[in-house]
Length: 400
Ligand code: NDP
Image 1 (tube, rainbow, N blue to C red):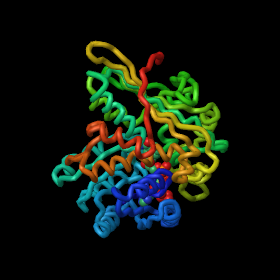
Image 2: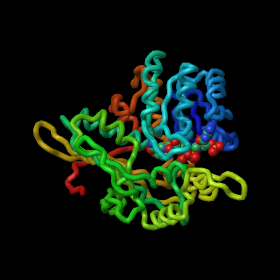
Image 3: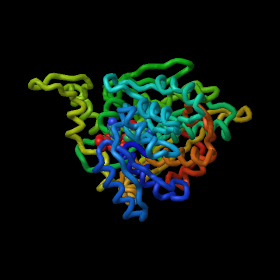
Image 4: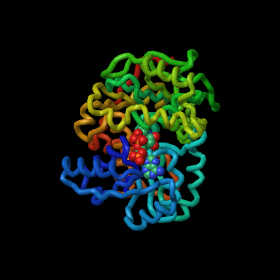
């Protein structure tokens, strides 16, 4: 059962439908039924398969429990918004079903994300013999798996990790975000943090004149300005990767995107608190979301590629070496396959792989897990079959 029928949920539903031997019955549930219906029709056209759809308010635990008990799925994939993580986990516990998601919990009223509240569910999942897998998109998700794979096969210990996320695509709009605008803008307007020698170092937000950035020469797409950004996988990786001395996350932004961001920030339209407008309460960032293009519609004319991967430096048999493991995904090809651009594609396919591994019991256990705590091998194999092939090369360049 998939919850959420946005840009990413659409990809997850299409991809599940492509593997009928694993996903024999699929239910797509979301807040707005027309979006579910549209995806259902497209899947029928592309694969000939019928999926079920259902309406649900995932903020409402009893409603979720009733739906899960009626459908009796083997697993619930939460592809709604980070705001719903705790209610969906709670409902899975009450209904007795395994859980997977792609983004960590965020309260609506504070632009802050961390795993604390979801990790707190560990004991309850353990006691019930249920499994919850957190952050199984691309980043977080595949970026964590790349670390686990390197830890298992490439290094005796990993000392430095740099996760580099590049979108070298063009959607033809003046300004748009590639996934949910509210979640995306909350993420990129935050103070940046990276982890070095056992502590968190803060640096200015990406649109600040003093932000930390450098030009990285990405495979297939060439040099792009890449900005230090805080990203959620850093929090779990510092706990689970041995010998780590530093971990950072970089994302590319165009000057055009940053200029829009600066103006929006300066005039206050990215604010997440309520303001009074002609006697009505309005949350500026929600109003802004209503004005911006729906990321699910960006795919039509999207060209170019995403390149996301990890550069990892560590020690093997006493020798220091660096490897770069990455995936390249093409916007137009993704759109042709599942009607979505590559940012949604790279986020929507990994939970399908995670779900497949959980259902086949290649990934098993009771409790709450981040993906790097699970066996990376079957996941790395499946990435190729499920449409996200990766490459591993020796890295000889220099990072700042
Ligand atoms: P969208 O806004 O496009 O879609 C969200 C979907 O969830 C919509 O269908 C929405 O319904 C539904 N939804 C929202 N609230 C509720 C609710 N209360 N009850 C039921 N359904 C609800 O977002 P995206 O598809 O872009 O992103 C989905 C998730 O993927 C997010 O959590 C995002 O952070 C994550 N993500 C993860 C990435 C990764 O690599 N790990 C990368 C990109 C995204 P409605 O149609 O009514 O609005």
